[in-house]
Length: 180
Image 1 (cartoon, rainbow, N blue to C red):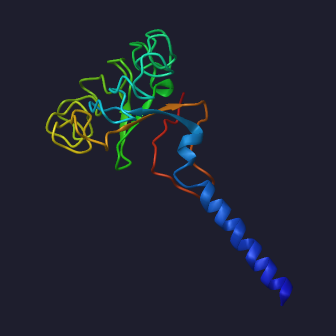
Image 2 (cartoon, one colour):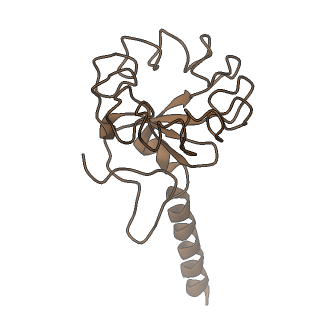
């Protein structure tokens, strides 16, 4: 009886640890958080806040032209017009929706700079460039253009790992391309 209780308790602890390892914190292990794409200059996580951690022109930010995320020559930069989709930072809405790749490549089908793509078109509901959409309107709490929002899309840079999935576990937190 005592042995059965110990086995049951240890299985419960192991399953709780497994559940913790597949929670939302897995995204931070495979992606580096680069701040919120927001026009709110007072939000401490906003890339528009020049005094914040993610908006400073001196740190490892997208606003620093010498950092890997702000240089026009780095493959992981948001300012490189030749960056490919798999190495570019991604945008995730506050509601968990994938909003495309944050790069300056207007030919990348997943780029927010592609005016004909799903994530860059001014007519797409998933685009931050749609002035009437959920993510581009100056009045939406999820928009990059709302100067008062605290729920702007978050920027994540890939750290080289290819997937978030585990055998038998499906995750819809972040979409990751199949090819490199």
